[in-house]
Length: 573
Image 1 (cartoon, helix red, strand yellow):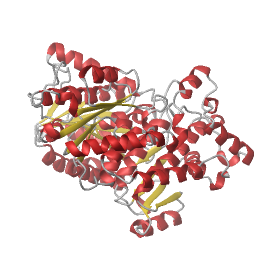
Image 2 (image 1 turned 30 degrees about the horizontal axis):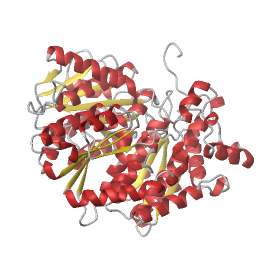
Image 3 (image 1 turned 60 degrees about the vertical axis):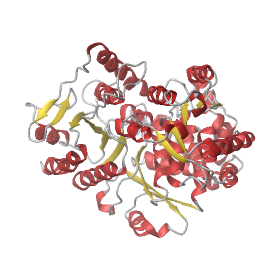
Image 4 (image 1 turned 30 degrees about the vertical axis):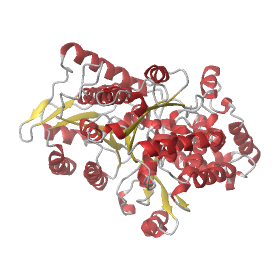
């Protein structure tokens, strides 16, 4: 690392390390695609050790071919479940949950199939919502590739105890989906889970949408599997090496992403048909976690309110995603963006089932970007930092019943606030801290709002208003994530990606003492709060400006009030 002040001339790495697809011959492009489909790890690194790791992450290039022989077994299992259960709760994080979440929001379960819920948070209120279900008629699908995911194992321990209290054979209400030989597999066998599915061992979580991760929930919801497979097969064929680069749907998308990135337009902004908006959550993880590392990356911007071209800085590129027949929703805005010179890629889907095709196109494109950017798109080297720091906070809490974080109190609002080495003020005053946070902000910086609050569309709408305000006043991009969901999705980018970023972490009072996680000695709120503190410390260690705001139990009203504080801070010069 260089000494002295950091000077960033571009948003990407040293030019000699970047390969530009435009400059490759047709023969070189075809060879690259052949190498990818032959699962040759050498295209991602010359380091033998990294090649060995990459080699164990490339089975996704088989597209739908992996899952086809398994479909009948999964469908017959879904029929069995349909007869016995009224609710299914899918417990997982990151790649184990985001595509099932997309499916649950884009499609509803077919009539006669159980209600389908995705639990990818440890927030006490979301846990309470699941507790209100008739648990004797609820199937819990416990999903963790590694079999060690802290939130998912906590879901299992907590709801196992609840079901055990009302049924003599609690195992009949539990299913596991995990790697062969994982601790979760061992647990499932010991406790007599109803069914054990194996996660494909040579596919990473965020590349697993066309495996059991996508097709088990699809079958459990009664979706049209033939339709889903038909679209996936067509896209697989449209990305094969014998399709010329310019017509190859995966390769041409990769070229669009790379050309934008090389021009410094690294904020990839999705303008989406509301019916397809949930899909952008899956895309956000794929792009952020695959390409956000080594102080560079493509930054996906999802679920912003669309605005006129004047509110966007020159670091933006756009993808317009819509269903055919509904393209007119943002057509005028897209035309205006093109007229202003912004790069725009339009993707129109025949129907909702085409998301099963798009996942493959985007996986191919993002993997190719990894090659061009000289990055390994299959690792997440900076995620472990927050995990380590969370563990330290939880160990401290278990010993001392205290996290060691002393909030300053804003007496006007009763909010706590905290800052450390990366944002400093002379006196601990909340309004002064907000002003300092936004001071000297370049339009190429992006702002992250990270909310350790209940997953709730109303909360997301409130934060969307914050994001619009920041964009209007500062012309910069914004991102939003619920904690701890984002730790397993975009957290890699926030810690390992471009340096020009700043973060606000929101927590709130709301500990439910009765929600003790068995064997752990702490509650879900304690776990969530430790993760917020852990990520604060991790971002700080990565030299990212970060502040923490601790709201009261009346957090929705607090957030509405926060808007005026934000407005004042942004008006300050």
